[in-house]
Length: 141
Image 1 (cartoon, one colour):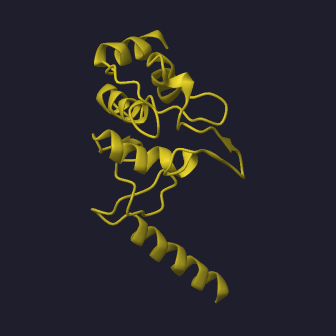
Image 2 (cartoon, one colour):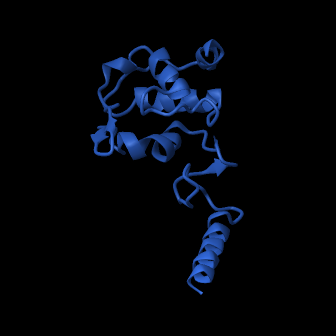
């Protein structure tokens, strides 16, 4: 009987977490913040929305970074963002605990979120992040 109750609960949970139109986080859990197409493609195109959906959970909404289960560097007032190819490469390829978003974001999305971070949170790097620059990083693998 206990097994049937657990199985029924899992079936209900699976049905609820995969309803059409629900937003799903990268862990497969419904979320009002995440907005994925399929399991890995974000649909947001605005840099601010991408940051809030994808980056803020680790780097914090104020981009001050944090520690806990891991170390998440501050993006606020970060000199490493001065050369746009560095954050483009980090978002594209990841490194250490930073995951790669190569398959989850288009070139335009990467340019948008990197451009947003470089012009907010006390950063004033206003030179635009071009699609050509992102494409070059993608092709360099």
